[in-house]
Length: 408
Image (cartoon, rainbow, N blue to C red; front, side, top):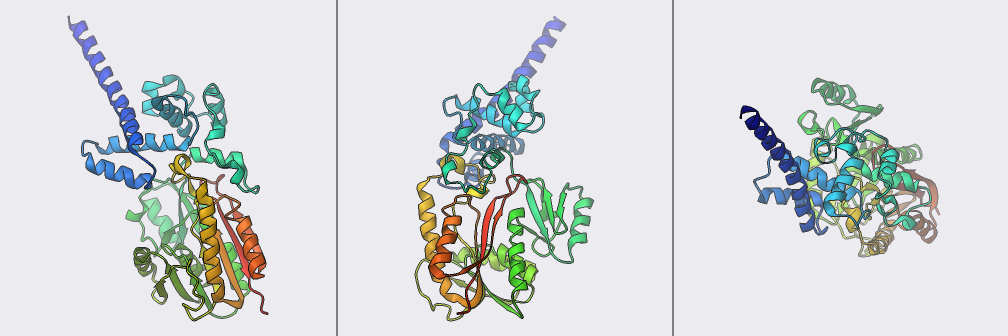
């Protein structure tokens, strides 16, 4: 009798544990069926959990991870059941033993530490990698398509750009809190994406959260500094949260800065960020640059930074839901928008001044094709074109080209 009761109790615990893992899987399925791709998944899942208080912190973390793993497979494996696809995605996206896999797919969990291509081969009977990213023909020839596509199966790192004179302070604080990091350069650190650095360092004052590829825009800003004399008058025309402006300030030093964006709320966030960074002297305005009005600023600039709206296809490792919901027709919409913005801002560029065109896209129509359009229409000289590849560094992939307007 005692043995029987013990056996029944053990079976009860086993079934309870299995029920918990199936509950995570079923919760992820229910959430994925509700999501329509209209808003960022991060915003959607936050609202979902706020409306469903039954989820504890572990429930939220596990369920959210399952959803993101599912998105990382894009349009692959559409023919298999949703629960099976989620498990395949979890297996491919995991680099160490996973408790859910251990219970539901123990034979897979034993192989979870294999290299990605080995795991792919292990699942060759069902894993069709060609469908992860559907828009291969739109990708620039300068990109290693296979490496780029498979990079979506890993979550990108969190990158810090250390501000001048703050390098030792930041590293000391991270060490004190035992937050792991990898030194990429004297000013760049890579950390696990979940790192709570805002609790440890003074963001924007000591270090800026900025992707590694975005930090590399400094290479082009340094060219501007070398080719210019005295104070440089800069217009960051699509400023958003001001990351490129902060970079320009740190790289160039003495600048006369103007920032603009179409969204007043974004500029309010920029104002707060600039205050934290110690940037007090600058001009700010709300501007719709798709409406031609050559004299609305009534001034000209030595450097116009145009970090233009784009598909963001080089950053989908951070928002993998785009792999499932992106509409290819949007590429044309973005290129039209980009052309209109450049048509407007080019009038504010001084003879001899520089235009820095930036996207976080891998699509050639937004990048090389657009660069050719700018160069030919406005007779600009190309100083340097740079692909900022991040798919082999757990970072974003970006495109940047620096032009100079002839003196005559």
